[in-house]
Amino acid sequence: MNIKSILLASTVAIAGISGAHAADAIVYEEPTPVVAAPVFSWTGGYLGGQIGYGWGKSRLSGVDFPNEVKPDGFLGGLYAGYNFDLGNNVILGVDGDITYNDLKDGESENYGPGFDVGTENKLRWSGAVRGRLGVAVDRFLPYIAGGVAFGNVKNLAYVGPISSSESKTLTGWTAGAGVDYAATDNIIVRLEYRYTDYGRKDFNGTGDFGFNVENKFKTNEIRLGVAYKF
Image (cartoon, rainbow, N blue to C red):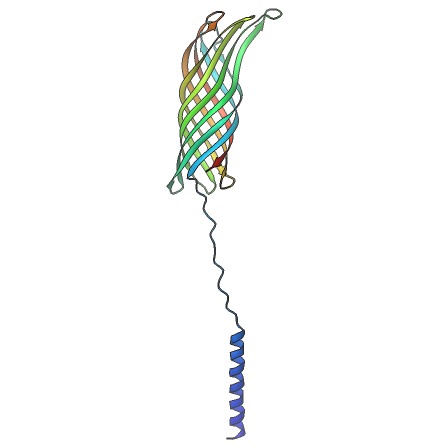
């Protein structure tokens, strides 16, 4: 064997050893799995509280009362419901609420010390059972809603120290629109506008004297709510 053969063999051997060590030095890492963020589900029940402001129009037909007053004031109460996901981001739900109201208006004239003559028309409490239809956009749920509404209205007339009043519960309909926002998986914030027509009813005052009036009552409301989703 000549010198050239010995050198060639040595070079091949050294290259093989170096390649083996280089292969041993390479560390293969498993690719990090990509975890998709969970999609929020609107399906489920909820219970919450709400506050708001309402203004309305109360038409009174009778000689003992003014023709029309415009009650307004604050309101607050509870609401609850359940949502069903129909697929394709369509959400169908049922919603109910009960609310204390301080919407009132009236007229009064003073005829001397301690002798006021006037009337008052007031929505004392209200409630509704509604269906809701919305389209979910991730954690936002814009919706429309409508259903049956109930409201307890009180009419009062007074002449000095004597008075007469009657309270009745009116039944009508309500419709509106709003948006729910899932701040967390369990906390849902709501902003809503609602129009309600409570229909009409006859009132016959009882007390120190009598009166007879037909009352037709309508309201507009802005409500802000926070609910817990189960």
